Length: 320
Image (cartoon, rainbow, N blue to C red):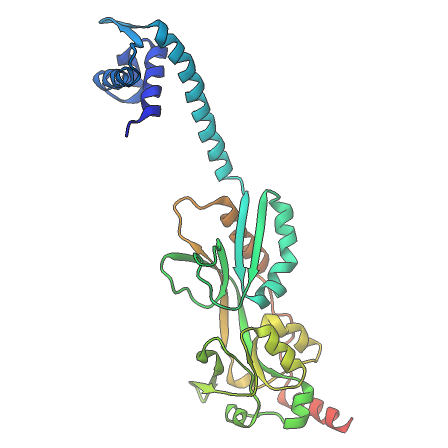
């Protein structure tokens, strides 16, 4: 394969500077290399472009025609490279984002209009799924995921931290009582996820020892929104992310349980994307935006009430 554009540039430089040696100095080459490149160009075209002497070069008639076209083409190539270089730093194009359903509803959807106003040349394509997606299979540029990074081919930036909290509705507790210790959950309807079994092994701490307690119930789902709806309806107990249920707790629709037994049940949300030498500006600015807007979100509810207050709430419901 011949380097046509490179030979054209050498030809233009040589003509513009008046000699092969001047072109060679400008391009950090040898005069012989410039002369051979122009010779290859003439052989390929089948015409003589330059009349050569020991001191100078002069365009032939054919060379004049070719030189004018080369000036135009080399200029267009330079302009194209300048344009692409500028666009590389200007966020633009289609950005495909995949996020879990509750994170998207609670955190992304409220702020994405602001992102699109800030970067109007970006076309945002959002998919929501609680399944862990493959970036290639899903054709996603960025995935918003919960938990640590598993694939070394990917990069991740932490967006926010959240707690997972065991909760139930006051109506459920009025009918079934309040679990006082983790072992009490064996007699309660604990709602779970059908994504992987480890999500239904709830972590607790007792006497300084950490342990995972398997739980079970009569309903499971592949997303936290469904579990939240069933817990609000009084079907059972669930362990849900604080960003999903903060308002429910603050407004009394849900009650936190066993708080003393799971003080460090914390996970992080990450923006995950492929490692790239030249990161597209649309990906870089989106991840920066998420960190900027979501990185300092506080919990949406006050500290959980005491067990005594829980009991008072249940007694009040029972008496009603």
